[in-house]
Image (cartoon, rainbow, N blue to C red):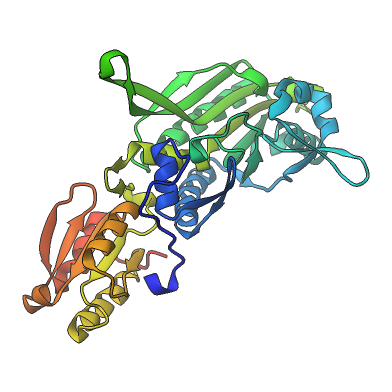
Length: 400
């Protein structure tokens, strides 16, 4: 992508009223912009990261034979009254009244509506087990939304729901998705901590939470800085058993013609929160350090005097068109000062940077830099594609 054709809204200064690193860097790097308290527009850089994370999640969910659906954000409050969760959620639940005086809610989760769906659509035990999932927007009326996407009022989630004829089947699926979550987070270079947790208002008796540990500095007496580990929850899975199936009378007849309430599981990943957590774990004083698998662009090309030096422009275009067949590339096709381009590239967090100048071209070379280590090396122009394919672990075929 060329900068002149791209909506890149970066900021040099720390935005006002931002207290977490991820909130600051997501705004400064042009990932999000704040509309009001806890509500954000996702800009192109943010959307690219979202899509890459969603792609990883989709791949793993498909391995579990999960079927993707899309459920409505608006739900009838009658479903929630039936489950009695309308009182449990309390003031965090967004409530709406339509023109016909019907009471609706903005969904924070979908256990009620998915159980009702399965009750009406599954007629045979032969259809089970079944896993249905969606990636959708959720809502929670946070009392004090802060820290950007880590605690927002509107957020993006992957929520999956499994249905079973018996508890053993539920336990097997639960274990499979447990392992899939480990794989999903590993693909993003995340070291996670898994804890057995309370099921809370979701229900059931077994659940596990998936956390990222980050380090904060906290001031204590005499201005001594003490490092404190902070955990950010990025995923939560539940064995719900028959709680919702009994409430909504969702049952099936077994092969022995016996009536059986469905066993149920629930599996969530907070995708927008996950992005904030990844940034809290991967940054330095200059900006974001993305894991390669989810960076908005894997490589940036910074040519010096692109619009003034014919040779630089010619070599830059040649490299750009060659690389973009296999990887995501961001080209600074402008005449900005090198320092400005370097600072912006560091802020956004491109994993690799190519610097093209008249002097290196004379030696038939370009400079390759690693964002995480700041290591730099002159590379022969003819070798740059092979070297980047190796570093990015891309097979020599079209990346997209």
